[in-house]
Image 1: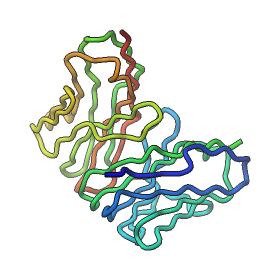
Image 2 (image 1 turned 90 degrees about the vertical axis):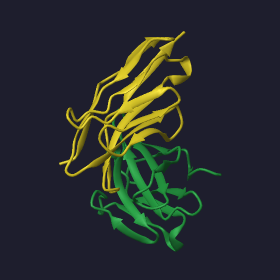
Image 3 (image 1 turned 180 degrees about the vertical axis):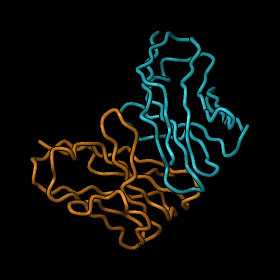
Image 4 (image 1 turned 120 degrees about the vertical axis):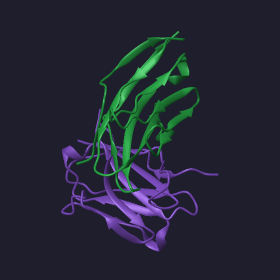
Length: 113
Length: 111
C-alpha cells in the first residue's frame, strides 16, 4: 500500500514569494492533516480536513496561509507571501477517520531567504 | 490544557545499551498516548500506542506503559541498535481529536 505522498521534498524561495505544497493521502483515508514542524520542535497542527471540509483550522495563519482539498482526496497548502519565519518542514498526514492512527508523509522542507 | 513534556536530547548510547526516554503529559479527559519515530529524511512513523491506563504498547523491542498515576508514558528498549538512531516523539490525543506532540528526543547509537 502506498503511503502519504508529498511534493516537493525541498523548496527554497525568497521572502514575499508564494509557495505551494501538495499532498496525496493514503487511498480511502477521509481525514487529512497539515502540520508545521519547526527545527527542534514537534509537529503543530495547521488544519484538519474531514473529506472536503476543513473542520479545524484554528491554528492556520489565515492572512497568508490557505489550503484546499478538492474532491476530498489531494490537498494543497499555500503560503502567500512567504516570510522568513515560515521556514520549517510541512508535514501531511492522513487517517481513516479522526479517531484512527495518523500516517505521515516525508514532509516538505521549506527555506525562506 | 493538553501538553506533552519529554526529556531533552540529544541522547547518545553505545550499541546494546538500555534506553529510556521519559515522557509525561497533562490532559483534559482520557487521552490515548503514542510514540512516533522519525528516521533521517523521513516522515513520522507510529512506533507504539496505548489507549487506556495500564496498557503497554510494544513494537520492534520498544515498550511503553500508560501510567495514569504518574501521568507518564516512558519509552524503553533493552538493547538498542545503530538502526534505532532517530528522533522520537511522544504524543497524546484526546478522544481522537488534535494530536499534541512533544519536542522530540534525538537518539544516536554508536557501534
